[in-house]
Length: 119
Image (cartoon, rainbow, N blue to C red; front, side, top):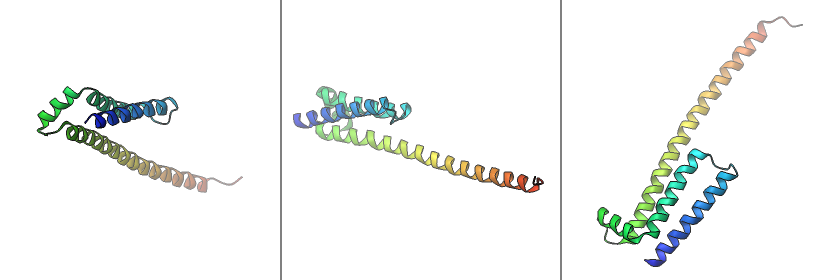
């Protein structure tokens, strides 16, 4: 179990650094980085605090702490991926609506230009 906790700690630190560097270079927006930072901090907290992880495993009814750690990590990231899927779907719908509005404006602009006498 110690090896799993060490690997999880390392991956959490790498994720934290990666998100902070991406945020600093403006590769990721602040509102999205908060979710990643919270997930990385939660995983870091669980991997550095075995009694907390053991309590979480007991509360979830899971016999082993490593399985609980992987289950919690999977659940956190699954929820994050669902949240981002909802955001992407909304952005896609907004993009379609915007393209339709631009097409309508172009149609009206062309119809107005067609009615004006040419100089």
